[in-house]
Image 1 (cartoon, rainbow, N blue to C red):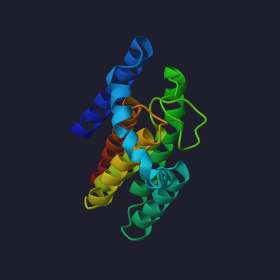
Image 2 (image 1 turned 120 degrees about the vertical axis):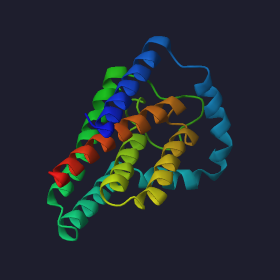
Image 3 (image 1 turned 90 degrees about the vertical axis):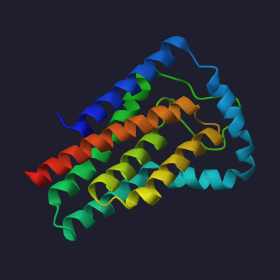
Image 4 (image 1 turned 180 degrees about the horizontal axis):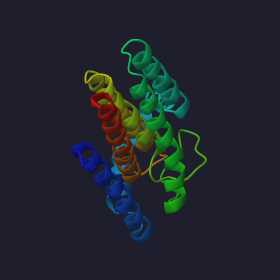
Length: 194
């Protein structure tokens, strides 16, 4: 088994372990403490709300489609293009199932600065952006990481500042997204080298 696939499975196991620990043990003491540390960022809520908006599923899906078209048309990598779309779609379909499995409610320390209607763990914004940008860095070009990875981190942090996620939700989302990205890149490169 490849290192990427092994790492993906370990990350997915970590998402499940953290989710069950949160479900069975409740909120760790550092979640509210870290959320309170992020509270001063609420003064520039517009910045964080902007980051949250560009991290929405519709934007992530559109970027994945554009990247897939680029892979297909410019690099003649049709299989990789399909894998990019399939990986992002699979991650987006899995996240609501994980949320249902763990049924973690959203934080109520502060009024939410963004509208939310579903459960909390793992963060969908964090997962889908980690998945997309890490996958593109691995499959398309490593220079994507210079912009994409910091953007995914900031989008995840925005969810804590906006009061709609606990820090552990974001951590779980990043791990989920990275797991899908590593698995997707494994299959894209495997097909490319076959």
